[in-house]
Length: 88
Image 1 (spheres, rainbow, N blue to C red):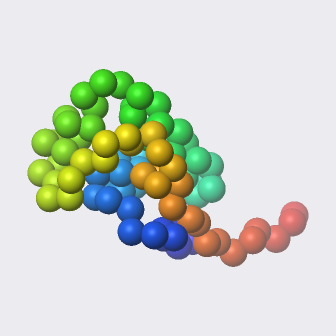
Image 2 (cartoon, rainbow, N blue to C red):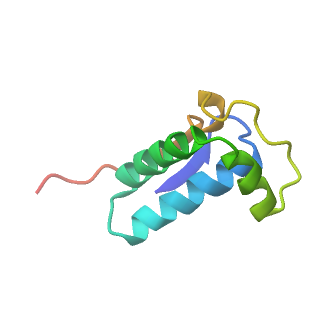
């Protein structure tokens, strides 16, 4: 599997989505489910006031933080390419 983006996603969303993606993968989720969980986690956290400021500070990011982190631009650009599994 290869995880990529359809456009340049800023550092803060990329760091958080990939962290959650790998957390779900290590928890046993298949890649497609792990990506969906990571994107939902981003949206859930993005609704909390001040969350983006804490993310930027913790990661020491250079990119400006998104004004509205719930917009799809910040989380929907991630795509997963994978070989289809053979049916048993």
